[in-house]
Amino acid sequence: MLKPEIEDGETVLPDPAFRADVLAGLATEPKAIQARWLYDHRGSELFEDITDVPEYYPTRTETALLRETCPKVAEIAGKGRAVVEFGSGSSAKTPILLEAAEPAAYVPIDISGDFLRASADALRDTFPALPIHPVEGNFLQPIALPDSVADTPKLGFFPGSTIGNMTASAGVDLLRAMRTSLGEGSLLLIGMDRVKDESVLIPAYDDSAGVTAAFNLNLLHRINRELDGHIPVDSFRHKAVWNDGLARVEMHLEAIEDVAFTVADTPFTMAAGETIHTENSHKYTPRSARLLLNAGGWTPIAEWTDPKDWFALILAEAKPVRRAP
Image (cartoon, rainbow, N blue to C red; front, top):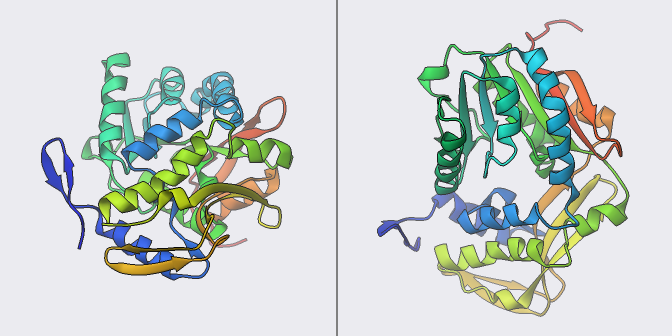
């Protein structure tokens, strides 16, 4: 049975897809739960906190790169496009692009509706003349954009190297869904984190203040709260490892002792040392980044990196599909 939540005085049933994914993920070997379920309201708040910890370089690096790069993006894209941001979160980086691009409209898309609406309201205060049309939804699938921007050229915005949370096949599927949502001739500005030394990568996903650990463990709290779970959260710890063969940092929830629990009346057991795989953060070389974009239907037309070559911003175009090599 789905456990109802009380939100703003109203009873709200949890997402049945959340229940299905959790039960399926805990029943598989090795156990794994899709990363998108980390981002309930509390998870979204904790992720914003992660971006401020000293060890987490991507946000600072990308933000500085955006300030330098967005005027160049605007020059290529031209004025009057509708900026469509996928997984907008707090939209903290968005004003940098909006100020430079002078768009006709802004369409933020996010799965966390309350977080989305709060961010949209904050941006309306900053850009009172800009039409803002928030869309609550799962951008992993093609999304119907508001009719008001149907005939407006689009500039997609996907910062934060969120593409790295997906396997190569899932990333290609996402890029194709974005192409469908935005349409042929659209542009996409995407952030992609570069491969670098493990001594830099691991602390970024296992900070000394424990913010990333709280973010990861919040998934168990959410399961307990929304799915009538009885997981002993104190019996788990956050674990981040570098998988060199797959060029990714992996986040896991590791059982520190043998545990038995139920979720939605379904029993599960885990041995000490067994993990639930919760998130991947793939890192890219310049070549692998371009290959991924091309496989997803996007042709890179410009690329910028920071002085350390730690992070890249790539502008790509949804060019007509070629029928021959």
